[in-house]
Image (cartoon, one colour):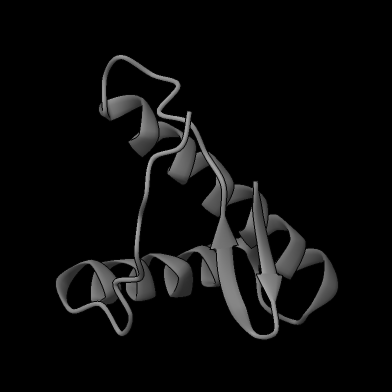
Length: 74
């Protein structure tokens, strides 16, 4: 689950997959869904929105603005 609370991202998740590559597929699927919503609700095309999402994803992976904290709960 992911939510924006008071302007910050809050995530609750379980590892769920045996292979980390599955997370890559999941993140790509979420990006495509987000791009489609932007295309429906703004003047951006799906491709333009996805290009912007990908550009910021790459920038954040290279130099995170806020790496956040992670803790495991059972």
